[in-house]
Every structure is written in C-alpha cells, then in structure tokens.
Image (cartoon, rainbow, N blue to C red; front, top):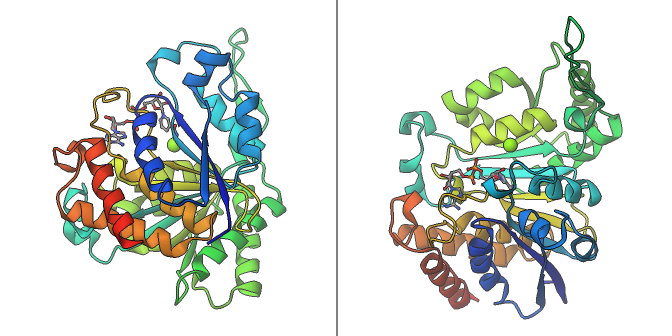
Length: 360
Ligand code: NAI
Ligand code: MG
C-alpha cells in the first residue's frame, strides 16, 4: 500500500454522480486516500462553458488516479460544445494510450443474464480487451465531404507509428504476465488488407517472440474475432490486443456477454509504471432514462475502483476484497433492476461497503 494517494472524482452527468457516490464510500474506507471532486462533461459546460475546465485539467494532471462516472445527455446534444469533447481532451492530455476493458462474470450467477447460450459460454472465463486509445483513424487527417462537386468524397486517415504499437504491446504483455501461467495474447488486426495492420502484425509478433517467448501468442483477423466473440468466446480468453477502431467495436460487442452494461469496469492508462495518473470508469454512459431514480447499478464503477487499486495505487489485495464483496452482494441477490433485483443504488453500495469494511 502506498503512503498517501490523491484520487480525483469526476462524477459527470446523468447517473454519474449517483454511482460515483457509492464508489467514493469505498475509497473513504482507506484513510491514506484523499479525494477531491471536479467538474467534467455537461456539468462542466453548464458551470464554466468548457467540458474540461482548467481547474479540472490541473487537478487530474497531479492526481494518482481519476474516477469518472459518465458524461453526456440529451440536454447538450444540439450544442457546439459537447460533453464528450471533455473526455477526449482528457485522454489526449494525459496520453492515456491503453484502454483496458475486462469482460467477465463478476459472479457465476451473472452467466444466466448473458444473451449467449450456456453452451456457447462454456469454457469462456475472461477476456481483457487492450485497445490503443490515442492514435489510429480517430486521430488521423480528415477531409469532410464537399457537396458542391459532382462526385462527393470524404477521407479519414489511419496512421500508426511503430513506437505507438510497441508501447501498448509491452503493456499488454505485462498484463498477461500478471497471471501464472501467463494469459495468452491474441493480436486482432486486418493484416490481409491494411498496411497499418501489417505494421502491427510485424511489430507485435517480433516483440512477443523476442521479449515474451513464455506468453502464448496468436493473431486473428478482426472479422473472424467479431464472430468468435459471440459464437465461441473462449477462443478469445486472455488478452485481446488491438488498435483504436477495432478495439472500440470489439469491446462494445464483448460488453454484451456479461448481461448488463452496469457491471463492467475499465481503465485507461499512460503506462503501467507509477507516476502517471490512470483514468477509471464504468463502460456505460450517463443513462439519462434512469438518472435520479436510485436505479443505477453502481457495480461497474465499484469494480473500476478495484482496477484503480490494482494498476495505479499498488493495492492488489484490497482490489480482490472489493471483487469478493461484489460477488457476495450479487450472490445475496442485493442487485439493481438491470440484474433482475429491486435494490436501490445506495442499498447495493451499503452492502458492498459493509462487506469490504468487515474484511479489512
Ligand atoms: P448508456 O450506457 O447511458 O445507457 C444504455 C442503457 O443501459 C440505458 O437503458 C441505461 O438505462 C442502461 N444503463 C447504463 N448504465 C446503467 C447502470 N449503471 N445501471 C443500470 N442500467 C444502466 O448509453 P446511451 O443511452 O446510449 O447514452 C446516454 C448518454 O451517455 C449519451 O449522451 C452518450 O453520449 C453518453 N455516453 C457516455 C459515455 C461515457 O461517459 N464514457 C459512454 C457511452 C455513452
Ligand atoms: Mg464505443
């Protein structure tokens, strides 16, 4: 456990404040962790005109870790300045190049909620999508369509530097080595068509062979990977390493496996070494349809705190306590409506906080 840690809370919009409030109760169990709360997204636009105000930028820059709820909502959709711009600006500012999204069942009971058949899920344990987050086609040169000419064209450019591929490959390999035996790593690309994918294929294959021969390594074309994810997900057990666009699509596809969007956490990191803040958030959005009603499932946010403890705060034992408490709460049936229960957001938080506190 580190001596003292600074965590910035960014509740954001919609259900964000409700779910972050429950996660903050877990953080409050640890006296060496101090928290401050700042504005981001729509709430920040309303208060300051900017979705990522300077005060928030300063706070996140000097934090050990950041916990975000969600941003966005119908209120800001038609505006020129949008809440999501705050999130993109923060990712770029902190160089959060690795988006880590584990897909798993927080309790065995959750398997029954999956839209996939039990026989399809047999053998599927955990898939961790490691997506490159600050390069590729989302950050390449763009030409918007000009409708005044007879043949209208638009361009998006996908560019990758070898150094960008190498750094996320080392990060993925380190995650694989955190398990014993090491988790297998699957590179997902489109090397039969794209030049950038061929650069990924050569760079990743060389690094894995030279530096990590003990890690089982394979490659898979993205179209086949999309099919395996719903037809035979055990083929993607372990680490799924991929570029920005493919990772965006595949991680959303994979997120349906656990049965509720409210369950899954994520981390966005600028590396595994200490000293650079990591951003942790549930994978879902601001859920305006249920905001303010006490219906939001706080588990994705609480499991994001577990990821924060593991990757940023050097508290792996405490991370396991949180995961164990979540498992026990689900097994006890203290769950929100998305998991078929009737518990409120706060009631789920109450039980998980009590269980973690009792285990400390
Ligand atoms: P959403 O994830 O907010 O909601 C989709 C559905 O899942 C809704 O029916 C919602 O009630 C339910 N849901 C989501 N989280 C839940 C939870 N914790 N517990 C129980 N049910 C939950 O996606 P949607 O509706 O497409 O987007 C709403 C807003 O969120 C939009 O403004 C969108 O841009 C934004 N958004 C923000 C993200 C972020 O902050 N990282 C990510 C995705 C969307
Ligand atoms: Mg997406």
